[in-house]
Image 1 (cartoon, one colour):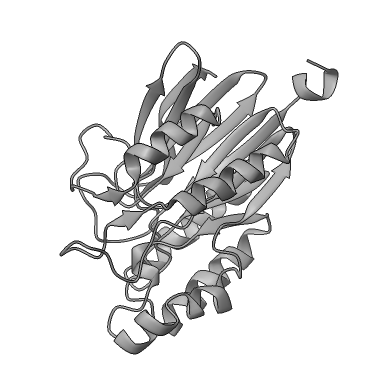
Image 2: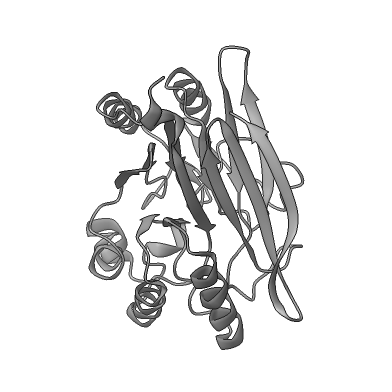
Length: 266
């Protein structure tokens, strides 16, 4: 391994489920302040910027992201597809997301010896009664393989909205079509870290074998007042020379503070 790879480093703030439309101004201000103080290399947002997928909510999300002053990599969530405008949901479901958040639904960023790739798991409709669930297609996994094949980065990170793993103590059940195939693909691609949301519950899960292990990080809702057993929170992730340091931030009376710290080998 050469010197550049040994010095690989990236600090990522992992946000999820902002749900603008249900946020409180004081929580938003506190979140902005702690992110700016942390000085991350990247803010990764694993979907659900809005509550109902309407223009004012997208504009609020856009203004918040712009105020952070750091690069942002994001993917849509199921709430970012129009909820009530069925015509747009089926004909152009990501129109507002592309207008206000990012043109790319599966973006890629590489720096500091780390390559981060996003996959869009939200769908306009699914063969299931609950369209809030997700899916990962074979074409998306082929795309991901191509991204990593073209990168010389030492560490591989993937971001998507719906968890494909069984996270501990999750408050809701989630179905992701293609989840088992995706898990196997991520193992073969030697993805180091997967960042997800959707369940509004922070957790750390390691899957794999002696050949390779992938660390799955789920995040709580960063801003929404619609909580599911955890306060608002986010994760700060540092990748450095074979180690993953994770700090789980939770909102308390004085703002966001570190509630858990973990160091894992990759």
